[in-house]
Length: 263
Ligand SMILES: Nc1nc2c(c(=O)[nH]1)N[C@H]1C(S)=C(S)[C@@H](COP(=O)(O)O)O[C@H]1N2
Ligand SMILES: [Mo]
Image (tube, rainbow, N blue to C red; front, side, top):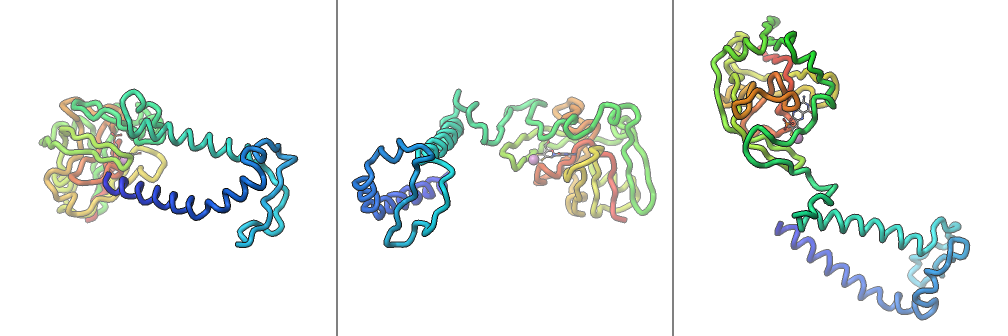
């Protein structure tokens, strides 16, 4: 906030200095060509700037592709659009809807409702993939175990209140319940080590993530099955997702298909 504020002050000061320094050029141009006359010229009558002593004007300009008033209208419309979205973001309230470029804040309240980064449909995850045929693959040292969601629910569960923090600008702190990653490593027959998490999501950079040994060993790190006492919704990663303390949201992999532990 403060940095933005000083940045703004410096920017406006620089703009004012620029205006003062350029004022003689502006005054001369207005005196020679009139204030509004150049804006009345259509494209066919648009003439380039005459050469100046600083050599800033192009020596042999090509034919114009936009009139001065066209340029002004174009820049004006763009500035107005940015002004409107900026007002929506800074003023908030009913204007918040206009802030189309701002982070989507979504619901920051309690409960199982919170923003969805990518829906199951957009990720290519279908109900068939997450239904009765779903198996979690637990792999370590060339051995593989397959677990149903019920198998996972039958294991000792742990509940942790932890945030999902998305770089897009929202945080949702919720109570997650599931199986500690360390317990799953033990089930796979290895001590906590580096872990490759694979998603049911067929494509995209977020369909897998690697967790460090420390993250796997942390007893609060979960393969979460429920949030706020309710089963994860399909869009929030059903049947199972990763929740790890201080892990950026992007690595809280949803729709976990396989956990591959380094042996
Ligand atoms: N498979 C998969 N997992 C994913 C993502 C994704 O696109 N695909 N998005 C991540 C991002 S960027 C965030 S912030 C969290 C958000 O979780 P949510 O959609 O349940 O709120 O999921 C993460 N897990
Ligand atoms: Mo995110």
